[in-house]
Length: 308
Ligand code: Q46
Ligand code: ZN
Image (cartoon, rainbow, N blue to C red):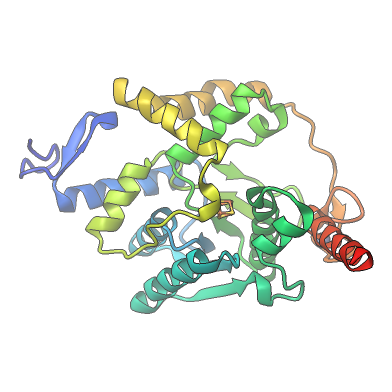
């Protein structure tokens, strides 16, 4: 098998693109794909400061690495979710990545912030699935850090597999408001929100894992313990089976939706946003979703003490 670009011996075969590359050409292909996604979707420009949300995993670190190499002005943000050994290991990987390259990384440990709540505590107190609490907490802290840090853009490492699985879930349940928002660039709907972008939306998990490996990026290999049994994983397995039989299906599913499906969902209602009375971030009611959750934890704890 020869590299499609330079005819040297190929080390990576990408069936979805019907191509194969040697190491330097794959690195070039990966970075070029990221750059094309940024340019075509008008995600950001070279003069803008980009906050990259990193989890310590392969996708977000591969994204940060590629953005730095492509000459973008970046800083990293790591949110310590307080999920035991998994969080400790992923924080160590994120820190080591930034240190080795002399990049600036802000670490926000949830259990040491003013509310002092890690994800397991919130999930246990409210009896919610950890991932539901985690989503609300991540959104709030990412939005807040980007706004307070004066960044016009927040980039996350969601890849093609994530996007395809999310799309499948949204289609299966006809989640019209979510379908209207399923796009690689979310423009802010409030002055305190920043542009949110997903430069890896056309890049598969296989490609980001290969890139991370070839670039010598050390990332946390273990999955979050709460991801087991998550519905997203079921969708990913189904899509992997489809991809195996019909290479390129995931990319076509997502990109055809964006070009032909998404315009049909543009009219989904989007209520006006005010500001949260407690934290000042955008909110649909008196409190934002994050502060409502924090208040619920407080109430449940008080009830537990009263009944003990
Ligand atoms: S980190 Fe958070 Fe994920 Fe863990 S608790 Fe769920 S959402 S699985 S990407
Ligand atoms: Zn709030």
